Every structure is written in structure tokens, then in C-alpha cells.
Amino acid sequence: MTKRFGDQVVLHDFDLEIYPGETMVIMGGSGSGKSTTLRLMIGSLIPDEGEIWIFGQNLCDLDEGGMNEVRKKFGILFQSGALFNSMTVAENVALPLMEHTDLDPEIIDIQVKIKLELVGLREHAEKLPGMLSGGMKKRAGLARALALDPRVLFYDEPSAGLDPVTSAQIDQLIIAMSKHLGVTSIVVTHEMDSAFAIADRMAMLDKGRILKVETRAWYERLRDLPRDHAETLTTDEQLIRQFLRGEAEGPFTNRESGQGLATALFGSDSGRIRVQ
Image 1 (tube, one colour):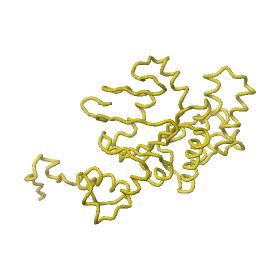
Image 2 (tube, one colour; image 1 turned 45 degrees about the vertical axis):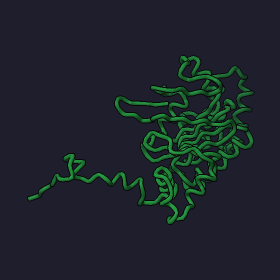
Image 3 (cartoon, rainbow, N blue to C red; image 1 turned 180 degrees about the vertical axis):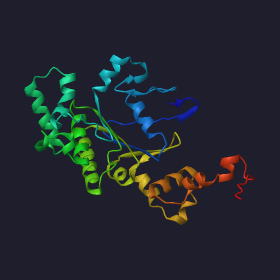
Image 4 (cartoon, one colour; image 1 turned 60 degrees about the horizontal axis):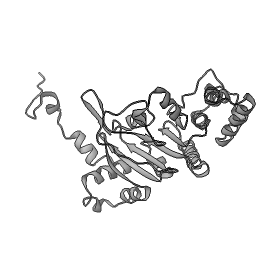
């Protein structure tokens, strides 16, 4: 698929297949197109070219009613948790059940307790979001995303803003959701420690195109490749390797610094700035 905003092409010839029950990590630097990809997958945006298929339906063919039915089958953990501050944790988790099911209040209450138990928050059910730590908010958001027993879970930067220990706890929850519930997980992130902990396969985005879709083991081998072997890699593989290793020097930074200040200001390297 291709997605444009005005004259800017944000995603170009994007092609990705995600298998049931796997954890797919979509990664890339700032401005690579990760957020746009997520918004397309959940139906918030429609591609200018191409199709998006989920549960046997093309999202591009659905009206709002049809899209809402599809959304009942997947859950989303937003970067901030996106909890309603005026509602308790339990009320936040209960909301999708109240809006989209005809369950009795007693059954909803049981379902809420089960979901909160899954993320280790049952004893915090009556707290307001303002009383929770950042990691607890993420877990509460995950409990709400699980409320309707989704087949697919989307995660938007689940480790963002968390300390290493809390981030590792969130990673373990993501793994548990896939292992014990059979949920397909799609994780958008630039946190490499988290990505390598949870992924079955990984897709690397750069400037709106997919450089590589491969197994975690393939990415691990590329990351750990000694520097003296890196010159044998393709340009795309060198870009990926620098990103995975978080190195300050390499193809990423070389292309960003390749244009001098004079070129940026005057369109020519011959331009000069004179201060008197």
C-alpha cells in the first residue's frame, strides 16, 4: 500500500503479512512511518493505494458500521495508556463491555476482575488513573484492550517512558498474551531491548519503505556481526545494523549530515556566510 499526505509520500509500496498468534515488531527511527502504519492497520486512515485485510475483510471497503464491528475484534494499547481520568481502573476496563455487549453487570464485573488479574492490577481496581505509576497505567490500558477478548492486539510504543524494570514487566505481559491467550500481537516501537525480547519476526521501516521483514534470529545475527564484516552488507543491511546497535556513525547519520549548511541555505556548496 501507499499513503500520502498532500505531496508527501509517507509510506511507499508497503507490503507486510502478519501470521496468527505471532508477535510482529514494526520498528524504525523517528519519521520512518511507524505511527502512520499503525493508524492504517486500525482503520483510522485509509491508504491511497493498496488494501488492508484483517479477519478476511478489506478495511478499505468498509463503512463506519462495518469498521466498528471489526474494531471489536482487536484491542489497542496506546502509548499513554489513554485512560479516562475521571473513571476508576475497573470502570475503564468495563467501558468496552458496557458499550459493545449485552452482558449483565454482574458478568461484566467478573470479566473486569479477570482482566485486571491477568495484568496484576486487581487490587488497584478502585483507584483513579492519577493514582497509578506509568507502568501501572500501561497495564490498566492493556486490561482494557483485552476486555472484549480480542484476536489481535496493537501496541503503540509500549515501553516508552518506562524504567528498565517496568519495561521488562510489560514485555513479559506481551509474551504472556501471545503464549497463553493465542493473541496476535503487533508492536510498534523503537526500543531495541524490548523488540528483541518479544518479537517472533521484525519489520524495519525507513523513510516510508520496508527494508526487511525477517525473524528475530536474523536481526540478532545482523546486530552482532563484527564491524570488519559490515562492509560486505548491502546498504539497507548497513542501515539496519546501525539502528539495531544504536551507533552514532553509519549510513543513517552520514546521509543526514551529507548536506552542508551552505547547501541547505543557498542550494549550493559555494554559498558563504560572512559576518562583519
